[in-house]
Length: 329
Image 1 (cartoon, rainbow, N blue to C red):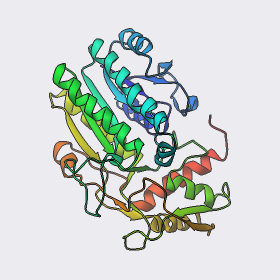
Image 2: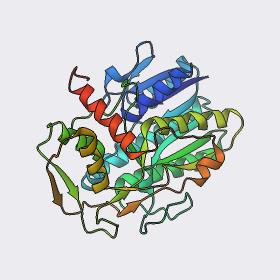
Image 3: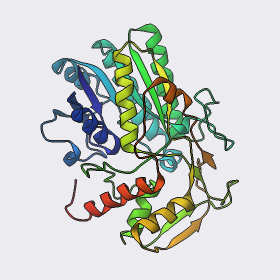
Image 4: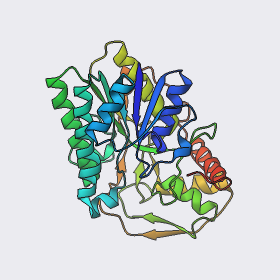
C-alpha cells in the first residue's frame, strides 16, 4: 500500500519518509513548505505541494496515488506561541485535521496515524503519565491536538477508519546517517537551541524556570530520539495491517532529563562552555512530563536504539555542524 505522509518535509515527517523508504514502502509526501524544507524530501519521492486542509487537493492526491494509509504530521507545535495566538493553532491543527479526516473517509483510507503530544495531559505531578491520565491541556497547542484525537475517535465509530494516536513526549536528535534533522533556525527545541549556542549561532541560551519542584529546579522532560519515534510509527502501521484495533500510545522512554542535565550534555559533547541565562517560567510549561510506556511496549515489538541522552545530543550536534556547512532550505 502507498502511505501519505503529511508534513513530510518537516523534522519528524522527513524522518518518517526515510524510515518507510528504507523498508521499501511506497511513500507520497504532502507539504506546503510553511515550515518544511524541500531538500529534506528524498529524490524520487512523489511530492504534492499543497495545504493538507484543502479537501479537494487532498482527495485528488489520495485517488491519484491510491492511498489507503495516512501518517499525519503537519501542524504548528510551539507551546508559547499557541498561548499568544490560540486561533492559529485551532486553525492549523484542529481545522486542518478535520478536513484531512473528511477526505480520508470519503476516499476509503483504512489506517490513519496521528502525531499528537504529551501536552494533552494535565501533568500536575512527577509520576510517569499513562494514556488514561486526565487530559486537561495547559495550552491551546495541547487542546488543539486533543480535539483532533476526539474527532478521530468519533469518526472511527461511524466509519471503517482505523486510527492510531501517538502522543509524543520531547522529540530530539537527528538521523544517524545525517540525511535529515531539525532545520528551523528559530526552533525552540531545547537540545537544538543548546547546540546552536555551542556553535556560536546564538550568543547565549535561556533556562526558563529554575524554581520547579524537581531535583535541580528546572523542568524535566522525557526525550525520545526521532529515529526511535518513527520506528514506533512504522511498527504501528504493521500492527494495523495485521488486523490491530485503533489505539492511543505514549511515545517516550519512561525516564526524564532536566534542562540543566541537557545543557551539561551539550557542553560535554561540544566541548564548549557557552553562556546560559536563567529566566522566569513560560506560560503553559509543566514541571515534569515523563511517559508511562507500558502500553507501547506491550503492543509493539519496539526496541529503542538511541535511548541515551548523550547519544541524542551527539546526533543533534553533528546535524547542526552539518547544517553549518551547505545550506539546507
